[in-house]
Image (cartoon, rainbow, N blue to C red; front, side, top):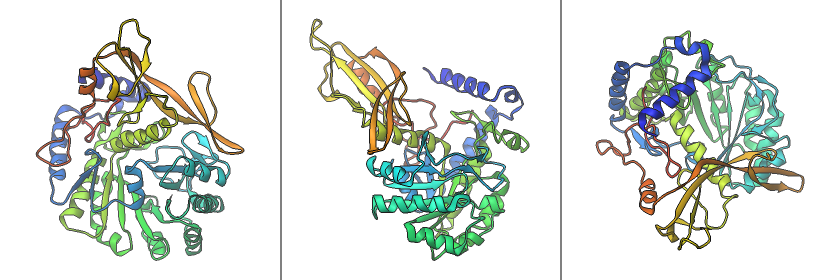
Length: 435
């Protein structure tokens, strides 16, 4: 599929998702895209701005311990419930569902089940999110305690909260149970730092994690020194994403929307990059990380495919850099039987390739091949195998060419030109395209 076809496919998908409101959305045009690309390039070229994860993560200073687990593909997130006491206009989900604790599509109703899952699948970090964990404080505490008891001292555990219900006693109980890091969404409290100051000296690492709201750019820039003085070690900024739930609120604002696998807000990315650039230029002690949507969409998905896909590999199959299961079938002679073989041992004769991806499920589906994985004597999960590409003939030369990912821009180390290309062999590099 060429670039124009891929653009059309993405736009058509967004049109289906948003239906009647699609035509009323303020989509980026060519002139604004060129202007924004120039602004982004200037911010990325600023002194001290760091680039990692194939150009999808932009930051000043080190990433937080939890973020390092994520970039290493070792993070599991538990949503303790679907209830929240905040009313943030940018929230992508309703936050009024009384769901059981969930990781992905799997419910973990007992702390011991989730802790056993984290240990069995070899995660290095686990977070408790929501909803709002402090609305279910005792339950959240039990999951933190079970994670520490089951997985030992090396597991990095963090919790994401708006801080409205945080107290010194609750923070100490969480830390005593094994919490390493706490992340506050101060956007839910009009950027109050009261809960942040309360956590300082109790929880080892204090992080602020918020969407980059364009209207708050000046306030955020001005409060960078105050964040450091309040005890914040890391500031994580996300890009605003349009969803059917928050569309009514975001469409009321003068945002420019950008196409992609999910619709994002142009001004949000530029806001985040300007904060990173300011912190880097002024050598602030506060580390600032722009966690772009394309990073999450590409790297977190690849990490899950790799982790679960390793449980499905048959003889001769291999995992690619993007976490897909590659099956190469070959035969040395026309009348010989087909066999599956790793890339290192195949020849150019009668070669077929197909790709699959692994997904974790609570129960098996008859539509997909799967493996049942026992976490304990009375709890199990299912790893399903989903085909993502039809089998096709390929030459060895063509396959080796497909193994070669795009190269970075020589002008700025670590940066890549924006791409829409997707591959089952490599993770797409670079920030998102503006279209």
